[in-house]
Image (cartoon, rainbow, N blue to C red; front, side, top):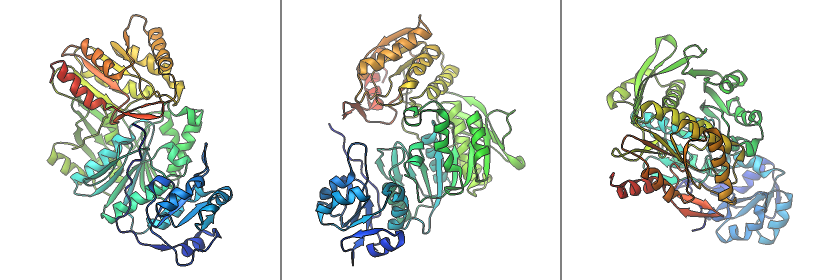
Amino acid sequence: MTTGVSPRLRPSHPDARLVTDLVSQFGLEVRGSVDGLEITGITLSSKTVEPGDLYVGLAGVHAHGAQYVDDAKAKGAIAVVTDARGATLAARSGLPVLVTADPRAALGALSAWVYRTTENTPTLFGVTGTNGKTSVAYILEAVLRQLGVLAGLSTTAERRIGDLAVTSALTTPEATEVHGLLARMQEAEAEAVIIEVSAQALTRHRVDGIVFDVVGFTNLTHDHLDDYKTMQAYFEAKMPLFTTERARRGVIITDAEWGVKLSRAATVPVTTVSTYPGRPADWYAAILRESMDETRFILNGPDNQSITTSIPVLGRHMAENAALALVMLVESGIELSAIAAVLERDGGIDVYIPGRAERIANSGPAVFIDYGHSPDAFTSTLDSLRRVTDGRIIMLFGADGDRDPSKREEMGQIAARLADVVVITDFHPRTEDPAAIRRVLVDAARAAVPSRELYEVADPRKALRQALSVATPDDAILYAGPGHEDYHEVAGEHLPYSARDDARLALHEFGWL
C-alpha cells in the first residue's frame, strides 16, 4: 500500500477572487493573460488541485513543483504562481504564470488573501513545544465544547470541525491547507480554532498570514536535531511564535530553563505556569491524586483564583498540559469561574486524546499506547506509570528511521533504567536498515542496565505479543511510538498497522478481553 494523499478541508462555498486583484495586491510579474480569471482556491500539490485553483510551484529538494503543472492544469488549475525557474518550466502548459522571487515566503499571505481568512476571524489558539502539543490542543477543544463553544481543531492526529474529521499528514499543514481549513471552520461558524504549531511550521512559513490570539508553550526537549542541529537553533525556531507579528498573548510553562528563557525573550505579554511552588510563575499546578485512568490537580493563580479538577489520562505531565490549556482559555477572556462551573458539572475535563497514554482495556495487564518518541516523553510516561503500577513495567518501543538519530541511545538508556522489561522492535524504519536502528537501541539499553530483561523482536505484532507473554495482571505495558497512527512506514510504503487495534486483538488472544 503506497502513500496516499490525506483529504483536505476547504470552504464548501468559496468566494471567487479576480486574479488581476491578486496581481495588484502582491505586485506579481505576469506572463500570459489573466483578464477575467477568477480563483476559488490555492494549493501547492498537483494531487489536490480542484477546478478554479491557483497552483503554486515550489522548488523542492528533488524536483520543482512547476514540473507538475500539466497535472495541475488537467485537474482544473487556472493559473500558476512560481519563481523564475518555475516560470520557465510552467510555460509549456499555456496557463498564465505569476512570478515572485520566493513563493514559499509569499504562500501564507497569498492563501490568506484567497480564502479571506483575515476577515471575521474566530479566536485563534496556537500550541508549540516538543511534547504535549496535541494533548493541549485536544484539552482546549474539549473545555471549549463543555462551555458550549464550537471549536475547530488541527493537530498531528486529525483536522476536525464538530463531527467532521480527516486524518493529518503533517503536524501543521502547509499554508495553503491551513488557510483553507481556517476558512472552512469560519464557514461552519466556529467560534474558536486551535492549531498545533511545529518548529518546522514556523521556519517553513506554514502559519504565515495568521496572528494568534493566544499561544502556548509546553517544553523544549531533545528532538528534531536532524533539522536544527543544536537545541539553541531548535529554540530559535520556536521563538518567533511569541512575537507581536504572530500572536497577541502567550502562556508559557516555566518548569525548565527553556521556558524561562522564552518568557524573557517574548515580545508579547506573557503569563507563566509552573508545577514547582518555588519557581517564580503566575500560576501553579499541584497534583492531588494519580491513577492509571485519571490525574486530579489544583491550579492556583493571581487574585486568589483557583480551580480543582481532573483529566481522564495518566500522568503528571498531562495535568501540566491541562493547566496550560486552562490558563490559555483564561487569557483568551473566559472567566475561570465559568470554566470551573462546567468542569464541576461534568466531573472534570471531558477529553479523549487519541494515542496519548491511551489505555486499551480495563482487564489484564494495563496496556498503554502512546505517541511519545523522544527521551523526555519516555521519562514522563514511565515515571507516571511507576507511581501507579503494582507490578512490573514492560516497555515496548522502536525508533524512527530517517529522523534525528542522536536521540536513539538516550531512548534505549531511559527504557532500560525506568522499565523492568524492555522489548525493542521496528518503528517506521523508512529508508534505513531496521536492524541497524534496533542495534543502537539494544546496545544502549544493555550498556545502561546489563541485567535488564530485554527482547529484540523486529515485527511489532510479534513484539507486542512477546510483551504480553511475560506480563501478569498487575503489570503495565507501555507501547511507545505509534500512538494514533494507522500505518507502518517501510521503504517508502505505508503498510496498514494500528497499534491500538493490534493491542485489542492481542489482549483478546491472550484471554484478557
